[in-house]
Image 1 (cartoon, rainbow, N blue to C red):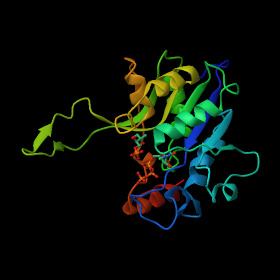
Image 2 (image 1 turned 60 degrees about the vertical axis):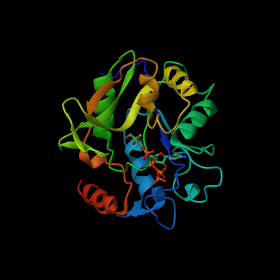
Image 3 (image 1 turned 90 degrees about the vertical axis):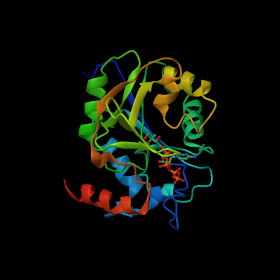
Length: 228
Ligand SMILES: Nc1ccn([C@@H]2O[C@H](COP(=O)(O)OP(=O)(O)OP(=O)(O)O)[C@@H](O)[C@H]2O)c(=O)n1
Ligand SMILES: C[C@](O)(CO)[C@H](O)COP(=O)(O)O
């Protein structure tokens, strides 16, 4: 349920280099169908009536973003860091004084262009006024193996694959990320909140909201984005 007094802001970390994609430019600027990946992601928030404003965080040297963001449609924060954690933390610091402590922040990977307004509204409605927050995620459907000296199966009951957006109130998210030290362990916003002993709500997302990480993911994203 969306609360009329609540305000919802989107924060899109887009300061990565896409090393695993191994393309000529940062993957968030690769074309998917008729427009760059990041533009698809941005348009999902611009098409949602629930989002008061969208912020995109990029590296200080980013040479692509100005051609992507329609004038005034979103705010570009040139404070990207060496990790996703640092980029989000830097962006939250840059928004101090602009966001109120109870404002909701939906952090969403630029690399997940399949997001749509329906998934955004589902997350907002399902989280409601939860005291912690929540994230889109998918229940694991395959059998999971852990590699090592003796390969073994991990029980998949209760296992989910985290997606984004991950939504938390501004102050809680700032506090959680300020306390986070190891970007190799804190690989999403929810894990920083969990490290405080809190339990975010898991909201079932959709396979279309995949993270475009490897070259083969481009075709999958194109398929989903070609369908209305
Ligand atoms: N220093 C970083 C690293 C990542 N990201 C963003 O976090 C999201 C998820 O990260 P990932 O898919 O890993 O993107 P990259 O880090 O660019 O990919 P790779 O790990 O292959 O380099 C992406 O939208 C990416 O732009 C970011 O804002 N700042
Ligand atoms: C935030 C995330 O997309 C949730 O699954 C994921 O942790 C990002 O990982 P990456 O290594 O930064 O792509």
